[in-house]
Length: 369
Image (cartoon, rainbow, N blue to C red; front, side):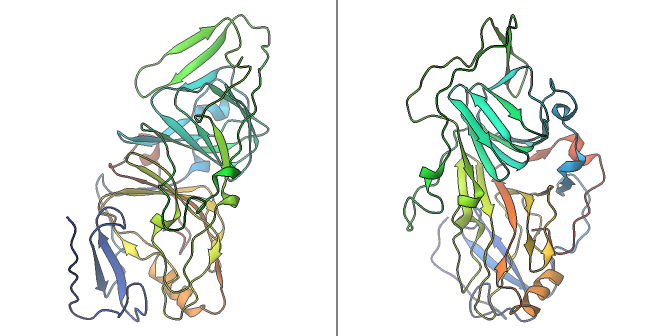
């Protein structure tokens, strides 16, 4: 329901996300940050609670998890979260697999946290490095060839990934699509084995194809469907001097029910009284995943490798001590140096047992968003 009517009751700041004084800014909104919204100005930090039950969220360092592909070349990535629209998995492969993958339930968007190497695909070779997104379209056969152990976050969407519709900034922002890495056609030679194994990446069941020849024998290709890479260093961060902008400004790619965003280094808000950190919220229509790639925020280190899940309806936001620090050191820090990959999902995410059976990660003060 849309409404043009807004009310103001009780003690409130003159403008949203500015000049809070001793109040705590808590946003209750629909449809992420694009629907009807209420700003509740509280006395206390709403993230200070003790949660019991199944709808409480998960914090884990992925470096503590061991996918089977980390210890066995024939192993596979570890499923961490899932719903009807997407699956979020972890790979820590250090050696090339003796088989190839073919995703048959959806596109794959892979974020490279650590490591380098290349993907061999039916379209050719795709080198990768830290900070790269690697897009693999549904049905494309590929294999990862790592130079060393690589830590990858795999976001598989049932629907097709697409770039956001151009807004008022035009089609070249927040990223210029001409900067993607596109493979050159290449025939990959066989190694003399009798059969080549291609495993389907599928939600249910297991299917394997065996070819008497190398499955990546493509001499050439044409069209507008292809795998590619894009590095976050080429992403343009949209900023405002006077107010902290909502996360939706940083949208990178989306599929039905799945939205992938980049929170990257940027100038901090410069107007006195402006809140420089995300406000408290309990995103009522989306689950949120934050994956910490690194960086810092007003002198506080961001914990690399932490993955944090905030379910719909659960208050989250950076603790009040960090907010007070950002105000107290307003003139000391002119930039926010965080590097966070965010995934919002329309349907509630289910954490797999490996994510919930171990003790939660210890989060450094001021780091969790």
